[in-house]
Structure formats: structure tokens, C-alpha cells
Length: 82
Length: 248
Image (cartoon, rainbow over the protein chains, first blue to last red):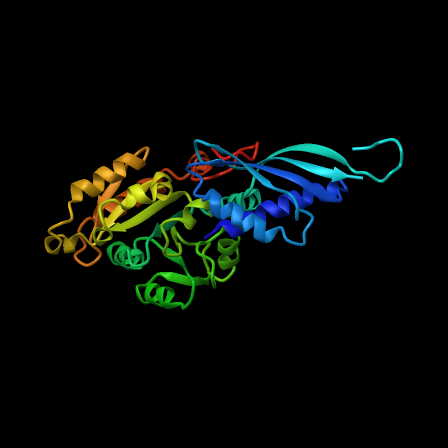
């Protein structure tokens, strides 16, 4: 169950982007997950929903683009900026 | 959404990030790899199930090398330093990485552990990962090669059930082959067939740490990897990052 560790890294990357853009909220998170990445998408989603509580990502769904190969990539985020 | 009237609405700003989620781990792994390269040290990530015989393999390796190479090991486990003590008793300079509840090693744990091991004069460093066929495969540690120890008692289809780890393996050691006469239902051919289905470039050595069978071939494999140590070799090792931060 390394998905929580992956989500921690994902959250850190998203939060850094949000801080540099002075965003008040993260609206969406899009990730690309390869079938040989060693990550279970269901567990990753559960970990994300647990981890995002009371953070800037609280209401941000994680959209998963499943691909072949071993990609484990933060593709794109949508921020709410004042 | 509203730019003009001052109502306080926020606007939605999309940002194209395209960054490896484990990019921090990749950076630390690259740093570790750089350390190993500077010292011409062959670092091997040893993975496999709990009880596959990872520690026994390293003990047999030390016996076979008999002082011809300086070898060290970092032994990862959730709890206890039993493996590190066994390795020390076998003449391997060892330090344990106790992960608590974490099911794998990451590059930062290895980097931290290097501060507790006199490693810079070693020829080989074995990073004995936490016994687990899933999670360790995801994290680059800075190794030159990944090996998986798969014992004959684990069943013939483990490579098919856990393809990611075997897909990333440069070498699979099928261990405990001295037990085969006692396992009439286990076919070595079927294990090897499973490996061929998931490994892009299958390299397999059959070993017994108890009898020493196959250990000479394993030592020769290490020697060949050692001879091939070089910048290009390291740059190709599992999960390393290129200039764009993308994996391979």
C-alpha cells in the first residue's frame, strides 16, 4: 500500500503550484497512470479522498488518464485564483 | 470567473504541469546514483517476497566471494535488525533501514542510511528491499540494477500476478532449487515461462544458497555488471530521470 506515499508526493506538487499561483483553491487534478506503474487506481483515489480533507484540495476531484506503460505523472491542474 | 465587477468571484486557471509524481524521489535517486558512480560502486536493488531468500543469497554471495570484493548491504525491514545482524555475521558491512509501517524503500531512506554505513570503499552495495512483490518496484533508489529473488515454493504464476516488479527486473534469481525434489507439483519450466511473459529481456539464474548451486553464475553476472559500470550504464538504470524529468 504505497498509494498514500504517492498521494503525499502528488499533494506536495499540487500545493507548490497552487502557492506559486496564489490560488485559493484547487478545482481539479489530472494525473496519467500507466498500467505498469505499479499503482492501483482505486486505492489511489481512496488515498486522495482521504488525504485532501481540510487542505486546499478539499473539493478537487482527481481525474485519472489510464495509459499503457509506467507513467506516473501529474498532467494538469485547474486552480481557483482571486 | 468574473474579472471586472469586483464581486470577489475567483477565476479558473488551468496549469499544464506534466511532472513525474515521484520527481522528488527521482532527484534523490539521481543524487544517490551520482555518489555510487563517483566511487565506481555497483549498487543492486534486491527485491522479492518475504522469505524468498534475499538475505540467504547475500550470505552465500559473501561466502563465494571470500573477500575478493568488499561488499556492503542496507537491509530494509518494517521492524527488527535481524537481517543486518545476519549479514554482518557473514562478513558483509551492513546497516538496517527500519521502515516502521512503510512497505518499500525510497531514495531518501537509502540516502539517509548511507550516512550510517562506511560505504565509499565498497565494490558492491546490496540494497535489500522490504519483502514485498508490489511497492518496492515503484521507487528508484539510485541502483545500477534491479534483481528479484523468487523461490520455487512461491508458486509458478507469481510473475504473472505481480508483473510490474518482474517487468523492471534486470535479473531474476530462482532460489531454493535444492527443494525441487520435494515439490513434485512445481515445474521450473513453468516458472521460467511465466517470467518470459512479463520480462522484456529475461535473464534468469537458478540458485541454492544452501548447496551453492548457481552462485558462481550469479557472481559472474555481478562481475559483468561491475565491468560495465560507467556513466551511460548508470543513466539507463531503472527509473532514472532524463533532462525532461520523464522516466525512460
